[in-house]
Length: 422
Ligand code: ADP
Ligand code: ASP
Ligand code: MG
Image 1 (cartoon, protein in one colour):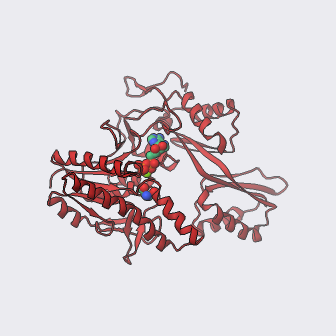
Image 2 (cartoon, helix red, strand yellow; image 1 turned 60 degrees about the vertical axis):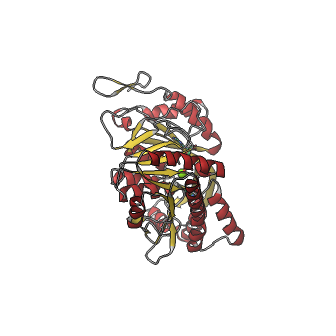
Image 3 (cartoon, rainbow, N blue to C red; image 1 turned 135 degrees about the vertical axis):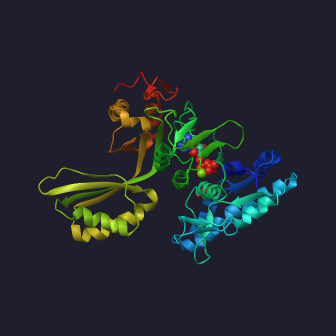
């Protein structure tokens, strides 16, 4: 086998017959240059949402096993259509489902984790000089049932396949030119990053930059598979995501992310006693609700308030659990707010710079944007704000951290940033 190239095309890139034909021509060109090509596709834009709506028209709680079978059909359609388009332009290609590539997952329907891939059949087709087109986002569990990998999961299928086939790199082809300092749809003068480390990208994906699914980056980091995010429509170099390298750009802040998919629950007036938080968060954990930020107010007259955030999909389940636990903990009031968003700044250079969080808070306060909650890690600061200020906060922070311009490396290879005082 020659050099294997794995490319993934997202939903917008295969969103119409014309686009599928364009992608087919592009792949045929790459094949002509003598490389073995494996292409992973997402469902055509909007299709996964439409399929979900169909299920919800029938039931509020469809069985997850059946949802998986339904959703996996979206990727099968685009996979078959792209293969037909490749064959039509004279490029021999063959379509494969998750089952056919031997993508084995655990049993968690709708957000399964990949356990292994037996790329045997895929390799055989490559040896026959065929382009292999794979339906992304899907696998099978130990019972042979179809599973899906969570929203945006075709990214993860592509990386896993690149690892299984020993590819040199995995290219994620999408509707933007790479990974930017902020969502280019919100910040028009966002700057494309030429390189970024796995760790920074993990933070960015975890904080809402949907350009790469979080698990895809985890997988790439674990197996040290270089990832390239690039446009499906042009040949610009895109963004390389790989191990941290001393030569890599190390701006103090390399990206600004937002996540509107957040909700806040406040449990007011609970007794300030040992065991209360444990009861509350144990109940949430056993209902598989992941909690992100938590704050507890200073106790007043033996009572306190606890607020925490969950994703909007988990809000209903979280409220049900909190109401159940409340029979024991006897809070005065429980409130929920789905109209919030999380805005975050990320940068490996934060490790060695101080004053970044303060600058973020000051910028938001200048815009009169109230901060509801704060959390920090070594390389990120996140604030919960009112959802209606998301775009304004993203643009203003982008400007305040002067992210339009690339950092300049000094003699020690560290960024010189005259605007950020440390
Ligand atoms: P695909 O359908 O190709 O998987 P997605 O919609 O999942 O594409 O991801 C691409 C989108 O991610 C872009 O259209 C862009 O709006 C959004 N995005 C959010 N943050 C960023 C960022 N920092 N850099 C690039 N794109 C981003
Ligand atoms: N079609 C799935 C989704 O919309 C998976 C993907 O696009 O990667 O989430
Ligand atoms: Mg995606």
